Image (cartoon, rainbow, N blue to C red):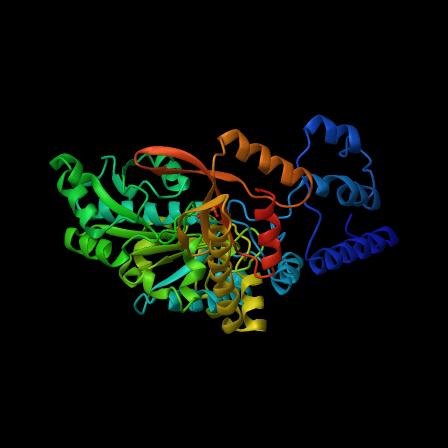
Length: 458
Ligand SMILES: *Cc1c(COP(=O)(O)O)cnc(C)c1O
């Protein structure tokens, strides 16, 4: 299987040609899902005792299967949180695979982990956290949030033997990402969501919520999760006020910036994150707004020792690192995963190649596109802005449309290969309304793209 043969050479050429064509194509075909039975009928069973051959398998992928996926970097894919990995990062993702680096321990991964740490140093600088703070790359925001929340819970338990064996409690806002709730379930912690009525959570509201806790619950409170850019609306909590409340109450503050974290590099909005430098931990997803391919998240801690206390794995077969060169940073000590891809390497290469200034500009462009879209919405009599654009998110309504109208419009645009823009829900005056939402990431999205989409709502 590993010997070089002519088939392998041909297959390699096919794969490289496809890769280069794909990353040079700025408007890839907007594919859409098909039923599994239909896909099976189109390609047949692909796993057989003798194999179907690389050329054949690749052809099935290229001609059929990839067309049943939505390219998330399409300039008119403005749904959920799209992505726009740089070409440099994608090419280096291939290099990362080809290099077969185990990213758990310095002993095996030193050179690769060095690259990751260079990129991480820049991320940590963006947060303004004090010296000694650092982080690791994870599979995404969910894993980063879980790693941070577990570190907080373990710190709380280590403070007082009475906390051992008790279920912990988390406080967050109802703008928090669904993964916060899901990960609270994974770690069997209770979660209270503070309703901040479509706005950001303030330190005062947090203080009030803490004051209202029963004594037994106050004792269980081990962390507050604030959001640095809600996924639905781009809203940033009052991090300064929240940090002060957490400091006063001696509660761990985790700031989830999985989506918004890239904007820490954007001078025009950096002040909105003031107070983040007081956090105990922070989540940032480079695969969202830092132009990395999937998957790449990051968790950053103010106190690395507390993270290691929670996550460092001890195993008989893991204790041979005596060589001096093997002494170094072990990413597996600071998050939930042991064996790991050095998934920060594509980000490192792209940052090293382009410089941080290009990143700043590309992120500012997303914010600018959201402002431009908001203006265009205001100019159209059939549309209404729901709230001013926030980071790179725009919420707007088509007057007189029902939820079904939004749904049909989404499917029609997708079917025709024009765009993917999905509806969302927004609560105002206590009621949920279906509205439309843009989220800009790709700096190659043009004003003409925005016009084209808005025109289909007329
Ligand atoms: C996307 C997102 C997450 C989840 O991150 P994944 O990378 O999808 O696991 C968590 N929090 C926020 C605010 C997000 O936007």
